[in-house]
Amino acid sequence: MKIIDINVRTFTHMSNQNKDSDGHSHPCKPRQVRQSLLTIQCDDGSEGHCFAPVEVVRPYLINNFVRIVLIGEHPYDREKLWQGLAHWQRGSTAQLTDRTLAAVEMALWDLAGRKLGVPVYKLIGAYRDKVPAYGSTMCGDEIPGGLATPEDYGRYAEWLVKRGYKAIKLHTWMKPVSFAPDPKMDVKACAAVREAVGEGFPLMLDAYHGYSRSEALWLGLELQKLGYAWYEEPMNEASISSYAWLASNLTMPVIGPETADGKFHTRAEWIKAGACDITRTGVLDVGGIGPSLKIIHLAEAFGMNCEVHGGGAGNLTLCAVQKNGMYYERGLLHPFIDYDEVPEYLHSRTDTMDADGNVRLPQIPGLGDDINFDYINANLV
Ligand code: LLH
Ligand code: MG
Image 1 (cartoon, rainbow, N blue to C red):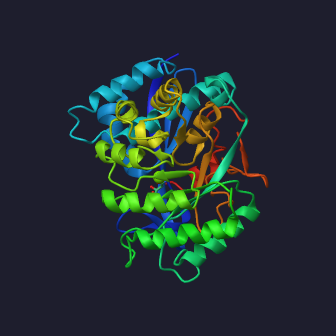
Image 2 (tube, rainbow, N blue to C red):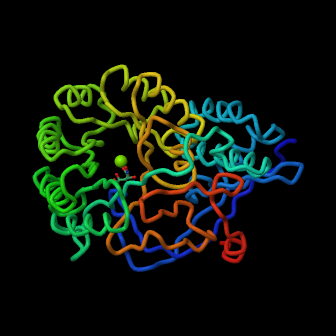
């Protein structure tokens, strides 16, 4: 069995989300957008797939890196193939990102799962078949009735509790919102949500990612008073010593890093420096499922939890194979967006959540996306 081809289908679908000038998602009028499906094919007819943004699997990357490492190889040699790509990141003039590695590696997992007839989380070794989800809000905005005021956050939190979520994480206001960033406004939103959901309900804050040490500490001390369960990325994650300083000055858990470069190497340095109480990985942040498993197990060896960043089939798979993590991050959510709607390119949602706030792992062979190939083939670019 060997890999004989890698192809990318780019297709259109409707989306009601847009990114602002700092890259944060917000609701917008439905519009047509493009997405890609990466497919790895083997000589025995087996295939593995992974969705990716168009630029992450653009022809230059597929032809000049991915094909060269993968063609002719056994598709189950995931570690060898991942190391081949990861090694090539040095000297690739930053073209070959962890996101491309993640798409390729997850397509290899999908291929193995489909070929063997099992969901990937069972193939890795499941810890659980359902995962409690936290509702992760979009960043604040200036849309009337959206997430524009502390009261908006409070009202939305009440709705999220009714929908079944057992925990909520706020993303508050970030640039380019006109009054952001403002730690005092963050505290007002956090207090309004605490008031809405009552004491004891697990709440987390993912604050503006560029506060100074003194702003971050002031905000953290306020969150402690409000009984928040973790404090995420209030400063630039490149400064490990700032996080070590923050963690040593707070009793509440500091979580991270999420977006810092360096895969498992960076997470090891954070743990060694005492910069976090809970560590973090996400398939797109560190180059896939394999490197995320290394981080989860590293954390476990230090008696630490590792919370998974972001949603989707790969991240849900990680949540199902770990003991040392609480939640699946479901979102990003907003009062004007029906997150439960099924995207046109799938037959069903990958992360369907029941009324008790649990996401059950899909039982289809592969990574878990129930791909609507007819839709994709009818809407090719
Ligand atoms: O800044 C944002 O839009 C969010 O922080 C986003 O990156 C989100 O993925 C996140 O951090 N979740 O935890
Ligand atoms: Mg985050």
